[in-house]
Length: 232
Image (cartoon, rainbow, N blue to C red):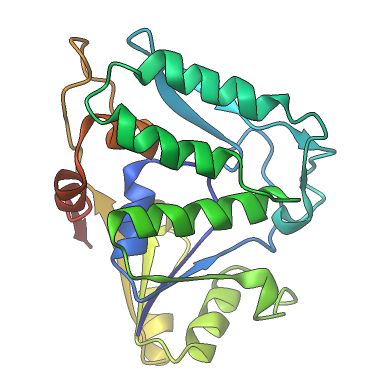
């Protein structure tokens, strides 16, 4: 059993989907502190040839709250505004007619919290791309938030009887391979390779939201891109 544990990000960059595809079970780490001005409720699209940051409005978001407790903002107009931005920016993209309905369904998902919205969106993205990975929110299963950092991750791995754990490359200084090995778990870090593709006639802007990747590439091409990483 190979697992990964990662905070929820809305319409994340392709490296996030690579991590999901690389494991058997993906745990959405949603019962940890919300990060202000992070990537949980924000990402980037291509607008007029340049990166454009979008933000989902939240209600009383604070680093004193767990992600799973942070509610979406009361004003639903953000959904219409985001879809309008997507329509205006990508309507001439080669796969707009098939991808826009998917994004419309994602943006309009019924959800009370940002974690619920992201969890539902990742399931829809998995279905669209043929990814078989099981997705589980940490807040509904483990109840181990008395543990911290590496020990909490190890506890989840042991409960899942995992023998392999894959973490984003940024966690190399946070986790100790020997500590994992002592529990019979191999520790790897995923390093995404940059994948370029035509974005209209513009100079390529890398690492945008998966929405951008889908607009310019068909499913088989994106499935190939999902394998463009190395494990370290």
